[in-house]
Length: 320
Image 1 (cartoon, rainbow, N blue to C red):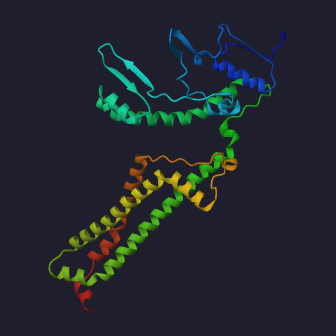
Image 2 (cartoon, rainbow, N blue to C red):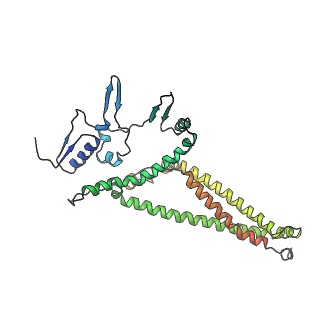
Image 3 (cartoon, rainbow, N blue to C red):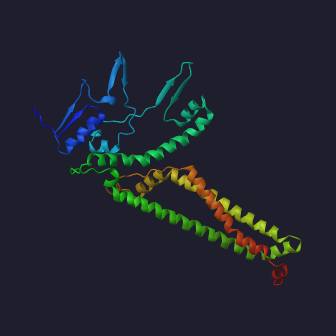
């Protein structure tokens, strides 16, 4: 037995096995020691009672990074992540229970048995956790990399954000450009609304003058055109939000349909590292954009409405 090793790992749990596999891939001689007759640690499934097999803690898989599965080719060796449905069952001494799972409607009903307020706020809490996780996940590998190479021994460790740096930079650039493009579209739409209302004011000058002569005050004319502009903006905003929501929800299916119809592939996995483009409609963002759009359209109606209220009846009717 060779007594010289580059690394000796105490404990053949899943963390120790992953570490040993990476070190071995790097050409290091590794020895893994385990006290039990089984390896795997928390992911071991055992028959603790006759006829009942349980897994110690393998449901805690959020830290098992996708790059580990990819780098070690675990799927080729039979690895599979099994979904939990339901994910948890908590019985209580009084006979009640709490059962939660991926079915959001079922989870809402279950939590509502104990607190309607908590059930309504649970999706917001889960969304907050997802945002925190997406921010912290890339830091996990970077922290390990800095800790291993603290003595400057020449180890080189790269995480998935560095491996695909150009891809993430292109996403950041695309997000910035999309913001400016959407801003320009909204400004153009607001200018178009102003032009439309100005044309309406020009065409309706005679009618406005008649209204003024029968007693309509300038403030009444101002209000009429403000309401008309607000209604145009409201209809356009609601229609745009609904159309955008439909396109976002069915975008993957639409994209695949276009690819199948024309025999093209917009997302080549060898270039973009993905062959599909999932969508996630966030109604909070849709609401914010809709409110900002309504405010802009309301502001765009002020000048045409002011022009209409300044119409002089004698001047407008002199040419008719």
